[in-house]
Length: 277
Ligand SMILES: C[S@@+](CC[C@H](N)C(=O)[O-])C[C@H]1O[C@@H](n2cnc3c(N)ncnc32)[C@H](O)[C@@H]1O
Image (cartoon, rainbow, N blue to C red; front, side, top):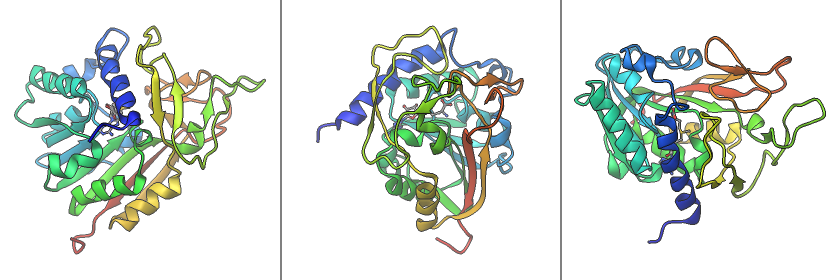
């Protein structure tokens, strides 16, 4: 079967970003290389104990967050559909001496059950993952299927109410303006040569197709597939510079310059009950 256009475009874009994120303007891997990698405070607040646990990180990109779990004694599997991301993640694990504890698998999210199988103590999804996926109910089925009874999903994502805004359409006050409807049916066709990490990078594969998933759809789909929602938090900060006007904090997060106009991110934790197989 031939690859759908949205997937081909998105994969070419992500393949290209791998080199950008490994380069001088890319991800800061200093703490990870020191053996002391950390996630953002909003993610750390939801993590269960990790030593000896099995963790699955879906859409793991270059594995920089996945390997934080391995540094804390977890056995980790990362999945991504970009062959370059998987190669980079595997090389990073080797460099950090975590090759025994970390395995990276190249597969589409929707093929993950066949590519990986089994269940995990923690399934983890973070920052800019689900906007690349067409079908949120199918995503929730995959995610929930990987959570063992008593295990949990932890997720940190850009808030859909903020993702409909765009700095390219600023208001007179310099805030981002509306770019797309919250209840958008079908893909948002994007043409963006800039990268969120390296301001100097210019991408060749600049066309992508993205998908909005309203918060209620995400939560309802997880519940429908057997998970119990334990925590849902909306945040005034995001892990990346979502809009030009955002200002960086000493904690590495980006915030509105004055008033918190909209939530920029959300985190959630959901569990499969021990009796729910
Ligand atoms: C913004 S990154 C996720 C954030 C990641 N935690 C990080 O720290 O960079 C999005 C990832 O999703 C992957 N991806 C996009 N669509 C996918 C799909 N259909 N199946 C699997 N991975 C996908 C991309 O290759 C990319 O590595």
